[in-house]
Amino acid sequence: MPVTLSQLSRREFLKRAALAGSVAAFAPASYAGLFGKSRDRHTFAFFSDPHVAADAALKNSGVNMADHLAACVRELAAWPVKPAAVIVNGDLTFKFGLPEDYATFGKLISSVRALAPLHLTLGNHDERGNFWKAFPRDATKLKSVPQKQAAIFSSARANWFLLDSLELTDITPGELGVAQLDWLNTELAARPDQPAIIVAHHNLSNLVGIPGLKDSAALEELFARHRQVKAFVFGHTHHWHVETHASGVQLINLPPTGYVFEQGRPSGWVRCTLTRDGAEFELRSLDGKHPEHAQVKKVSWRADEA
Ligand SMILES: [Zn+2]
Image 1: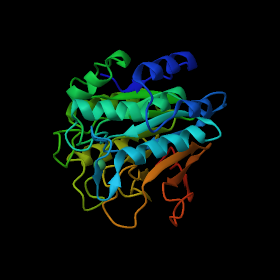
Image 2 (image 1 turned 120 degrees about the horizontal axis):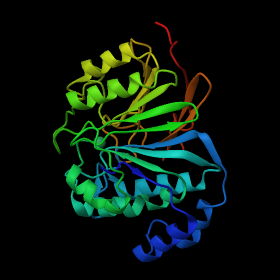
Image 3 (image 1 turned 60 degrees about the horizontal axis):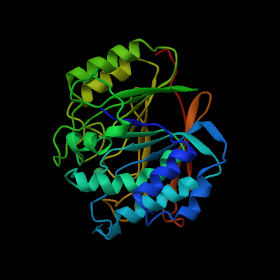
Image 4 (image 1 turned 135 degrees about the horizontal axis):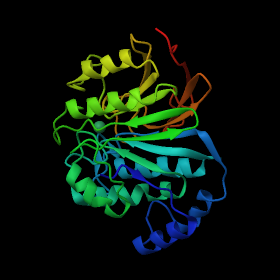
């Protein structure tokens, strides 16, 4: 079950780029910007809802999704430091998770692999079987949750829990499922001392008007049980927004790199930098004139004791 694609060496990256042929969005001359930068081990880059179709020229709601993703990748490549990791939080493909969609997505995202490890989660516009086939050489096997793609990685200031909320392809709501929630409960119990950040594609069901997690209540129960859970990061609503859950957990709703549902909302990516007792989330809007572009939301983690 692939979720993590390791960072590639300069040599391996250039070899693969040559084999794949030049990616229109990313001319070989600009590969240079990917190398020779230092890494900020507390900084992470979030992309969500790229909705890339096989046909890189396809537009939806007036947006060319492939161009948008390529622009986000270029911005990240030009960022002065390398992030500790890059996370793309679901809805990688336009609607159905077709093999050809993943092929185009894979080309567009490939440059990121010269920068940092790349973590991919699945949304309701993904198809697990096709996704696994699309990245076979990079597969990280994790059998803890059969038929789901869940993983944990650690960073200097937090443990990250990447969940799989895809229930049925092209059906809006999502579900974590009992097995994955049990797994999460066990893994959180084993890591009580470090802040935990949970990442999944779908929103909590009662948060906004868009159907989210069907088993939201069970996840929120884990927020209450495990006080080290400090933030829940999700996409799905295509609506950049940060708020605090009743439990004190920070809810970080990522913007889409692709199209927005509501006119005037930003699309782009988010820089996250962990601090000693919280985090900064900065919107990097593709429209540099958007009023929320470069705004930094500083959040503090809730206390370890209720
Ligand atoms: Zn989406």
